[in-house]
Length: 477
Length: 81
Image (cartoon, rainbow over the protein chains, first blue to last red):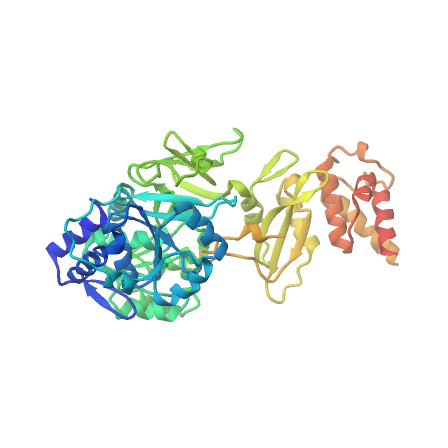
């Protein structure tokens, strides 16, 4: 069953139910299906080429476009609106779409990127709608999304309907989504977290409420009550930022929420603990996954605080192993197998080497405890090799964070003429702290092996992080 | 007075990097080869500690030439003068 079949199911069961809400409109399942069918009947889809680019923003109109392209039998190449020109050109060269669809305001911006591209607005697509003689076959691939690789080669990840169905069923099974839910999603749809939430809502026939901006915290919190939301999907930094509000205020705002789902960027212990109290007897959950292997684990936080830093156990039907690079260590590269894992990358034989007999080498480092709970430690790329000793920055960062005067710290490798690499740490001190470098070094010497002692310490004002709270290690120096 | 303070700081660096080193065992002329744990990583730790403590930066040659507490003291003094 594909996502269009799920939409049709909802139309059969409750056609006049409001299925989709954004900040300006709301539409029923019947209206959504009508719009999707009209969109996909556009004569612009009568073309042998299979890929259509979509600059995907958070709006009902763009959900129609996404589903409409799928319903036309094409593959959607999902393009973030904030993409750089260089990345855009790289992706387009790889996916080779014959048209790009976007909102009116994006049409001008993207036309400047490439004058030869055929860029249409949603309205222009609909204006060319025709009477469909026959419903086209749905492509096996639903969408194509690009991940940031370490090389300049773009890594296209083709997501099949089979993968979406498998993953969505797991989400529903583990987190208990139902048609009675109202799912508030202030996440970008161009990311697989947000898109997975959309698929889940359509699969169960719940109401999907889409916000444009998760940074407007008060708006998100007010929307919980405004739409009578029962679930909320947010990234961990948003949860942490919520804690600046009064406890009582948060208890009141979250009183109707049965589930908060977040994703696998590490969540500060305090955030987990505080939200466990706010969500008492309800679910606070996270998952671990990659675009290439969506929702590979699930973690529902409970009273067992020893597991607060775990991302949980493998999802049903998914296998996880640790490929150790040193038998002495319990940590190693996480590898995943299951129907949620891509079969290959998009026309990229180099990236395909990450897939061995159905096992995806994630490049993430972690370990499994005796009960098969997965703990994330870092990225394989982040490992610092000092004179043959492999060091995971996370271990150093966690140790140094124990110093009370430290607000945040990041460890990374720098070139060294003798060792090849040594460790540098960039440290943000707490306000009014008189912490000096020697105090940090003394602490390190007492608590870390000598090859893990930083050779350089710099006090900084800011550590570069992305919108999901992950450190942008390529920007460190 | 200043020289005395620097000497105390240098001694303390050695006690930090070699926690098993006692006051009695410390000698200014005692060489790298006579320390049980003075390997290349310990060398790096001594250099890092001294650079942080005195806000100076050693060249590669200087880093390699430090083979005793006295060498470190002289090297630091050459930067501070």
